Image (cartoon, rainbow, N blue to C red; front, side, top):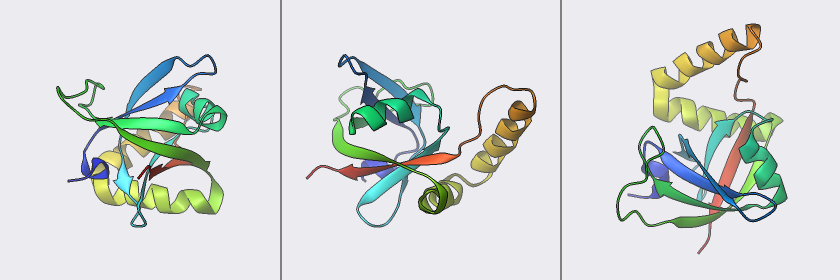
Length: 129
């Protein structure tokens, strides 16, 4: 089982000063040796990845607690939008089904009240060999 087969993954990105920041995300394989997840274009993850594309991923639970003994998988991340975002969004919807649909509705409602942002971009990770 690969990291992209996990239900939740803790992705670690890095601030300009080198501090690590970890966040739990859903992840889905993209079928070409990469995996992806969706996020808001104004998220901290996007800002940090644009500055430093080196990331690491470890299996975790929904709250981001990493499993004991979990091995980090190193990768290079890139931000994708528009037509490049569609395959990532499709893979997440396929893997997470109803949960992804419910999250999309919740984000749309939150947007009406200026709370939260809908996932409007993707992060594609290419695993280091």
